[in-house]
Amino acid sequence: MKGEQSTQSVPDTQQPIDGGCCAAEQPLSESELRDDVTLLSATANDTRYEALRLIAASDDGVCVCELAPSLGVSQSAVSHALSRLHTDGLVTRRKEGRWRYYEATEPAVMLLNALDAIRHDTHE
Image (cartoon, rainbow, N blue to C red; front, side):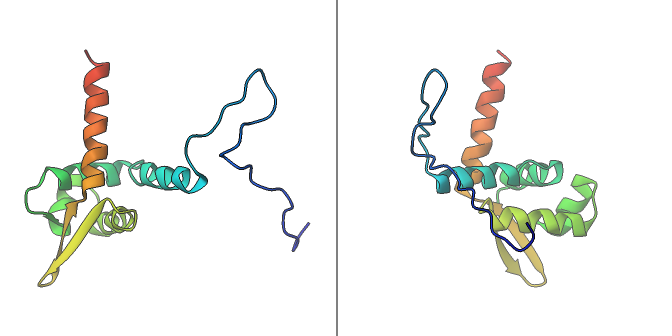
């Protein structure tokens, strides 16, 4: 009903799930699961993923002004994508004059390397 809080509780992910033929125990905490989903969802958009790939391939960071033409989207769309990638810890940014330069973080590089390895293994 409107205005009432839900009385349903979220199951404790550290406990076995009742029912069925067997009980599966979640190896990750609720916080770890949430962090993983946040990280994966940050890359689950064409613009953000392609921007991250371009940034990770750069040696000294990439400026927003360089990404818009490469991605084929507006500078506003690029800025929005970069903001999400930054918020979720996949890129760092530094300001030089009136421009911001973005670099991939170590977790971003590790994630991209894992995806490359998976792609390589599935195409052998």
